Amino acid sequence: MRIFLFLALFTISSVTLKAHTSLGLLANNATGQDTIVTILNADNSIYLRISLRGNDEPKLPAGVSIYAINISEDVFLIEVIAEDKERYQVSIGKGQAKFIRKSDKSVKFYTWTDFFLKYDYASLVIDKTKNPVREAPDFRSKKVGFIDYESDHISAIKIIGDWMKVKVVSDCYNCKDVYGWVKWKENGKIIINFTYLD
Image 1 (cartoon, helix red, strand yellow):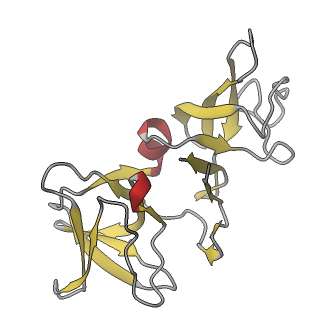
Image 2 (image 1 turned 30 degrees about the vertical axis):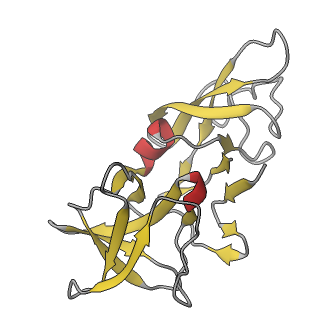
């Protein structure tokens, strides 16, 4: 089982990504005939086309770093750093930006709030020492006990400001689900992580 781990000061397979300060992500939405995402230059000429279906991983140009890509597992995430009326401006790594038309049906835009509440990631990754799950959305609140931060499934169920209400599901027999709060954003930057399992 492969694990994709996206960290707040992110390292993915030795690719370093900046902290989340962007608008959100474009995610794989490939259905029917809409299976190829087209990445554009500023003048709307085609920079790169990526098929979002199949078992072959695309050959990306040197220096291009997509936020997360594993086509055989339907994983394609690209960071949106700005938008205008017709296009999303996306990061392709190393300070480079390109564009994807809003009319491109092969991808769907998620704000970070929508992503954590609605997208099908495997689990949140919480730093149990610096940012443990708490009983209330306050750093002075008690820590929630009986959480195995390494193996329990943690998912967001509500977001209020910089705090996220989470549900913790354990694999143990007869264990009840646990609920609590974790700070997910600080000074405009996301401070939690998430994983994909395939």
